[in-house]
Structure formats: structure tokens, C-alpha cells
Length: 63
Image 1: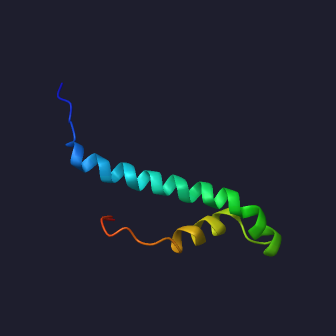
Image 2: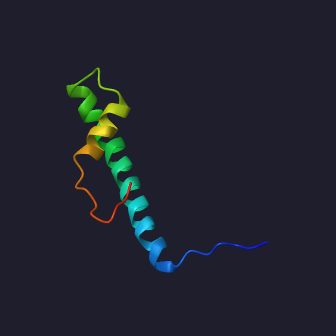
Image 3: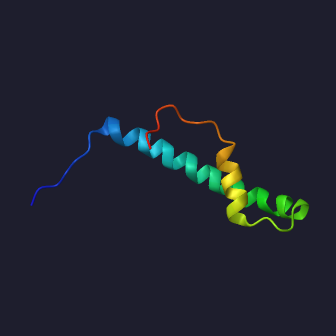
């Protein structure tokens, strides 16, 4: 059985992307109570999407 080992260079950018996504999620969790107080009908998912849509794009990211 062979194991695929990724070169370290390709893992690091992915780890950074995951860190940014986690930080964005935590920012959304923290800011949601204030947002829902102003906009009672907004769902957490809508709020979360708005957080990520306002984040600067990572030029290294490939979709």
C-alpha cells in the first residue's frame, strides 16, 4: 500500500487558507448578536456569507 505524501510547500498555503476560514467563522460568531439586534430577520448563514464576501480575496487561492 502506497501513501501519498504532499510536498510541504503545497500544504502550507492550504493550512493558511483554513486558518483564515476559521478566523472568519469565529468573527461571524462574535459579531452575530450585534447584527441580529439591528436586523432581527437575518440568519447566521446570511451573516456568515456577508463576512466572507467582504473579506479580501487571497490571490493564491484556486477554486
